[in-house]
Length: 240
Image 1 (cartoon, one colour):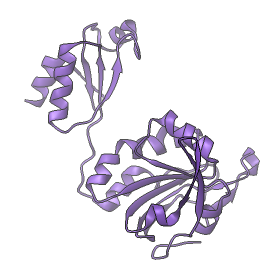
Image 2 (cartoon, helix red, strand yellow):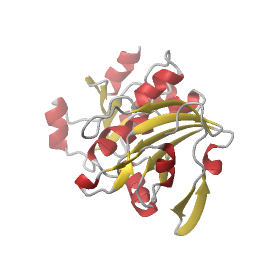
Image 3 (tube, rainbow, N blue to C red):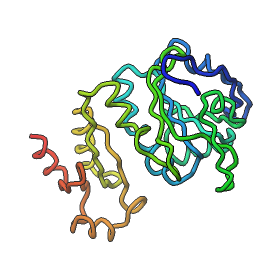
Image 4 (cartoon, one colour):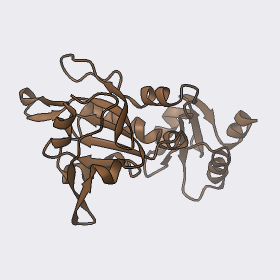
């Protein structure tokens, strides 16, 4: 089993890019770079899709600000599955690597038998910080039954890299196409360097659902850290 201070296994991955086969080596990914790797049991599985990938995706810019060059999601799946999962997760900035034969995972000593689930050989869940091909830090989930998710999360990794880094605010906004107040709200958030999730009225969310959430039908409607803020005027007051 690979441990901190050791080099990662030398492997070539078979990937598909723009309809063509492309070989990607560990040297291509790790040489002269600081790379976060998080490895998980399988694409489209519940914890992986609802928690593991989304949070690394959300904190991508924060990690880049703290000296990380690349974030890699690794799984013992083929490249077609990994490419579709990347699209489904809307995680274009993360590098999804298919360890289809389990060579890298086996070399890491993290290949486990999940035949009881019909999965065959898969990766144990873990994360690591790799600098120029050498493992600096590993967070390996405890050996428990099931699929523990306690230490390989994005927040734990960020805490290790920079314990003083503040997590970005979770901001959600309902907007409407052509709405000038919506654009003003977005401009305000962007001027403060704040990212946000956006749902468009009549496309992503219905007027009835918006009224149920806010008792309002106008746009924008903004939520910050789970708290309902209101429209553009209220957002301006919030930051003043």
